[in-house]
Image (cartoon, rainbow, N blue to C red; front, side):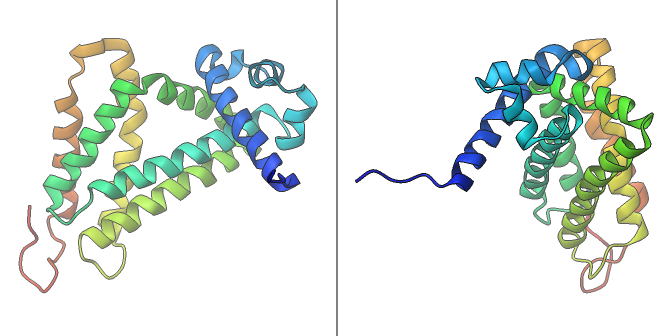
Length: 210
């Protein structure tokens, strides 16, 4: 018996196809070089179909960014297992170094959009919302992993610093290649974590595991 596809299912499938096509086009041409027309052609849809799902090129990119942020949140949570501040921070840093090796072009694309959005108050606010979602998730994950009842300023500062160093590390890797060692990311992140979190109490009292 033939399964009938609903309008909502068809729309979701078209949206997924457009996002996949958009990722390919943006990575190949950059944010400024990409066009909605090129995305439509890559996906095999009309340009009207793109605008039906997304109001603009910026909307399309931000939807892609939301998708990627969701993936990064799950990746970060997967390595926070209560092994201790230094071990967990090192694990997240190694994970990020791996992203720079396998997905540097995407990170550079996000930086390109970030600079563009900074000059547009509306886009800047929308980008800030996506960034805030990632920041909140990292803070929550670290708070739970550290056995804290609620986030502390130290945990929030560490999350902000770790996210802030990401774009700089990506630009350094793009410019220097292998001369910018993975270990630099890990060592810097661990030093920041130990400095900022050294005075936090351990669960049940006593000194926190390093």
